[in-house]
Amino acid sequence: MAPYLILGMLTAGLISIFIDSRLVLKHIGSKNFSSVFKSTLLGIPIPLCSCGVIPVAATLRESGASKGSTVSFLVSTPQTGVDSILLTYGMLGPVFALFRPIAAFISGLFSGIVINQFDHEEHHHSSKTSVSIDKEESLINRIIDGLKYGFFSLPSDIVKPLVQGLLVAAAIALFIPPNFVAEYFSSNEYIMLIMMLLVSLPVYVCATASIPIAVALMGKGVSAGAIFVFLMAGPATNASSIVVIKNILGSKTMYQYVILISITAIFFGLILDTFFDISHLMISNLNHVHQNSDRISTIITIFFLVILLNAYIKNNWTSSKNHQLTKTIGSSHDKESLSLQVGGMTCSHCKESVKNAVYSCEGVKEASINLQNGEVIIKGTGFDEFLVKEKIKSKGFTLA
Image (tube, rainbow, N blue to C red):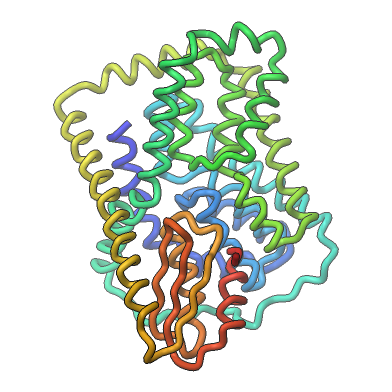
């Protein structure tokens, strides 16, 4: 697992240099097939989870993207990412690794087209058609920033869900008897697919963390199609992101989004069950895992564990620092302060989005954002409290 995640982190960091929200905003502003196609294609390599993609999608919508383009981005982005694709290849083999981005692209494209067909609202471009770039960075600095993202920011986002995924996979391997699922639920393949879909829709699991769980389920006799339903619907949805999508795009689009994810997940699950033998996939995967036991693999694994440990320490240190900063800001009386409880923040992308929204308001001088408890403390002089709240909500977050 470690070599593929290391390579995935490196690739994700390098991609972050060339693909960002500014590039996406430039190409998906129109309500046509081209915008849906571009938003789907650009979303596939970006390593964002179902919650982390929300503020980006909210920015796209706010900047003039059509509902179809926004939904395409929401569907295709969390299902994949270069890190999860490479890890899929390492743990589940080439069939799943190839099938995931193809399914993400087709489902995103199909969903965007359907949403645009049912969306009869007049589409308006935002007046903010361009995003200014403060300065041109040298290639070396951009590469350094990309490596920082790949080996520091990204691991900080995935360390918690990845460890949780590994623990769930271990629990499945320990407590569920071999072939339990196949023995009791394999009489009807549709039941297995629907059961996996119902489990996947409300649960938060990122594209990377879903893979070890999928491997454990495979070992218990779950069909390839049902596993793929989990790999597709799990990262693309969760209870909190569904609620936020309602706030951004409306109730009608939210229901359409969930229905389209469900239909496409079941469809691709049926294709896998029809054309691929699960036993062949299992044997190939186990042989591949046992072959990776040389000295180089051990060194890479240690390096990967150091990265995860650093991410864990960084998260806890940042949380402690934010707590101290919150106390400092909260106890200061020389400037106005505002305390907000923001819902929907789960990763560094969410935090950065809230930070940018807050600092875009005139009069804001300092802000402390705590991902663990969702608390945002704002300090400044003469800032508009209503405007601050509206800016945060415009990014798809909720306020208690």
